[in-house]
Image (cartoon, rainbow, N blue to C red):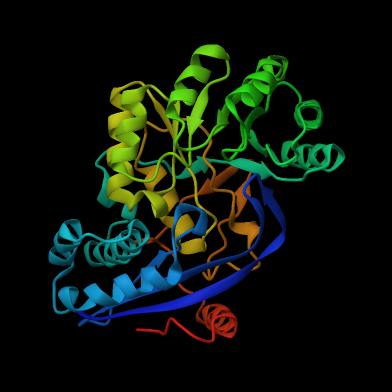
Length: 375
């Protein structure tokens, strides 16, 4: 197989409902689907979806992709993957290209992407957590009760957006009450707290049996994260602080986290994510894989990553397909008793819903009449 065409198409998909974090309310997700076609007519799909709060711009990502397309034309898939390792690209662009190339390679070799990543026995289903962002304690209680009834083994509660310690503790208590003692509860503060606020709240959360708290302090405050680990009994997870291999190594060397939250889209792809997981495991640090709420293409990729990573034993943040009004794929990766099955088939195991992509691509260009154009 030789690459004869690389194409990208942007999308702008609304959230299905209110989704609020300490960074603010999210109402729409933008990104671009990458398709790579070979001389045999086989199509590989990938996705790049930067986040503004991580310094990402979709327009800049598309420009960076355009600048390297010629270097990959007429290459074999293996050669293109080798070239990709040497290029200095925005991480989301590297991830998108890698996904499309791995999708192609899997189809060529008749392997799943998970099988390309590891020789270890593969899981066929992954435990996932449900995310609750409801701000009112009563609404959070109802959402948590629903999660328990649907069999989720774990719930992640978004915290830090109320600006009031007592109100935060009321929400946490309400969710734990709804879940009972057997469902795991984790918190995600999205950098919202100062050290003093985090210490005050988390010290009072011990009765609620919190599995861990994600990014309680600003991403650049590793000193505070390290100190907080020594001060409170709740494990600390690094999320926003982790944005590539070097940042993961820095967090680990600094002793700033018990758990690493890995988003392949922001880390730079599946190979980099596997390397982070391996190095963390050697240090006795656990990892959790999550999406950054992209389409079903990235969700499928994240599922293959976890399937290829027996080191990951905690529920992952992959129950995100319902958060957007459309996921741009034909397959439905339904959640049953808190588990998602890995897509079957070769490569990523998913196919594009071309009609949906056209619809949400048109929405993108209506919102961005000047600027990025398709390659």
